[in-house]
Length: 306
Image (cartoon, rainbow, N blue to C red; front, side):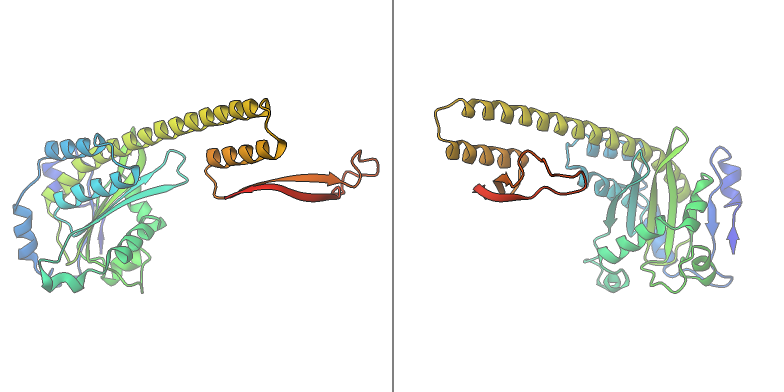
C-alpha cells in the first residue's frame, strides 16, 4: 500500500519539513538483514555541514565536468549509507539530463557481490526510472520518496516497472529544488529491503538543498567554460584569416599557397582530412541556368591534407 501521509512521528517531530511519501512492505514481510543496516545507520552519522564542505571542495577542485556529478553522488550515497546513488541534473533548458553515478565497492564482502549487478545495468535502470512519469509525479509535491522494497507487486505497479529485472530493493529519492524550481533528482538504492529511518529522511532533506546549489553552480561553471571555448575558437578563426592574408601576399606559387591554406584551415578546425577543389562550370555565366537546376561543373582536387 502507499502511505501518502508519510511517517507521522517524523511529521510531528519535524513539522517544518515536507512529509515524505513512504511505500511500505506487505504486511508480515520483514526486511532482510535489518539489523545490519541499522548498525550501519548508527555509524559515521555525517553532519550536514561536513557534507556541504565536501561538496564545495568537489566544485572547487577544477575537475572535468563529467566527473563532478559522480563525485557528488559518491558523497551523498555514502552519507545515507546506500549501496548506490544517482544524481541527475537538469540543464536550464530542461532538454538534457546529466547524471552522476556511484556504487559501493563490495569486493571486501564477497557474500553480497552477486546481489548487485554491474554498474552499467544499475545506472541504466536508475536513469530510466527518473524519466518515468509515475516516478516524477511522486517527486512533484516536494516530498521524499521512501520505499522499503521496490520489488513488491504494489510498488512495481505504482512505478510502472512490473516485469522488469530490478537491481536493488530499498530506495530513497527526492527532487532537488532551487528557487522553487526542480533542477535535479537524487536516488539512493539499497541491495536489501530497508526501512528508512527519520534520520535518513532528515539527512536527505538537507542533502537535497546542498545538491541543488551544487547542480546550479556546476551549470554556471559549464556555461562559463562554453563561453570561454567560443571566444577561444573565434580568436583562432581571426588568427587563421590573418595568416591566410599574409601568405597570399608572399611570392609563393599558387599550389604552395593552397597547400598552406588547407593545412592551416584543417589544423584550426581540428579535422582529420581536408582538400581544396576547383570547379569549372560548363556555363560559367549561367545564361541557361534555371533556379531549380544544379549547374554542371567539372571538379578538380588541387591539393589535399591528412
